[in-house]
Image 1 (cartoon, rainbow, N blue to C red):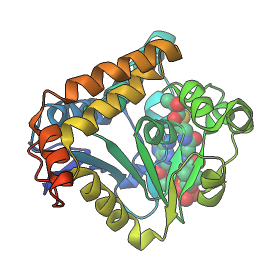
Image 2: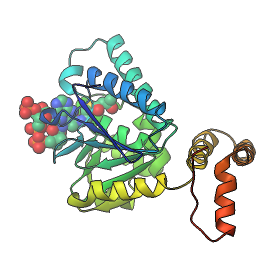
Image 3: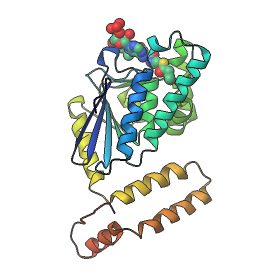
Length: 260
Ligand code: CAA
């Protein structure tokens, strides 16, 4: 299927989703969000895909935010609907069964920073810039930046970014824990693919159960969260991957996981 604003490539169990509106620095309008929703709905059901990489087209931007021209004349109710659409798409990405790696190749501002934060892992090019500029436009963030940012970097750093609307560079984003790694722009996709291949080589049921244990568990109190972990640990023992992984270790050979 072809989308107007998204490119999708699949190779060796890895899907690369590229937001493709470089003239608008890949800004997110409703049409792009709807396409992202369709793409990720398809990936969730695609048993051939183990890991997803999300990036932006062009050399300048990952995503420069929600589309300001699109938002300028929205009514209050339309703006609320737009925020709910963005939040639903980002929730879908956060809760995709497979891990999602954001390869942040430039500006990740407003909705773009919020999109990167919905991914499991963020790799940043040295040229990337992060920020939540919304209050400079007279609005608060609308795609859950007020919630994901403090959970990632702590309340103090988050409030400084949210209230000041200042941009930070990749090294500062790394220092505060907003990104996992910084690499030269030319190596970004290669680094993301190497990490994706490593994850794809592991037991896929276990990777998915682990993602669920982290994501669901962080929404629970610790006692319920570790009880949930015990449930998913037990569930893994109903899989061939558990038998293969442990047998391969004891037989001193690499495992041949089937994802079942
Ligand atoms: N929405 C719509 N168009 C955008 C855009 C956005 N968020 N960001 C950039 N563009 C467009 C520009 O209007 C420009 O279009 P034209 O060529 O047609 O004039 C084109 O992309 C290139 O941008 P610039 O000329 O501005 O490029 P620059 O290098 O001078 O600056 C930038 C780059 C600092 C990223 C600057 O474009 C910028 O500040 N963009 C807006 C960032 C922003 O405020 N994002 C938050 C949006 S609000 C939001 O996201 C709300 C939410 O939480 C849901």
